[in-house]
Image (cartoon, rainbow, N blue to C red):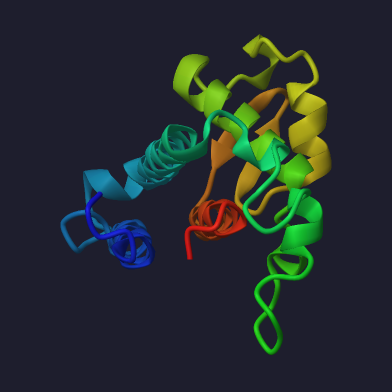
Length: 169
């Protein structure tokens, strides 16, 4: 991306676009066939957004970059508890931390590779990690995740937190 400052704008626009489609249907109506398909559409929309955001983060700073030292802090959890400065809510108060980012990666692995089944991930602690994280918009039925609309905003803000941690803004 040539203009790095537009990352904020594009993340917001994409999330707004999807949230509108979640709320009103891709064709502006929740009538007919789409009404019954809406939960699956929301799940897949959230999965695509998560996969794209984590792929972007991995391309910028490597896999699981929240587990390595950042530009202004050596520890992601310390960073998120202090940024942004008041009066805004810091990332930590939004439940963004290293453990929850690792849980997001497990959700991504499950929805991209295993039809949402965390038990099929390589990391055999995936179910426990995602259960402990209690991520907004993530429902667990046994070991299978279903993603709902609130998950979208969480992913957007988590992506920004990691980019801020590595000195993007």
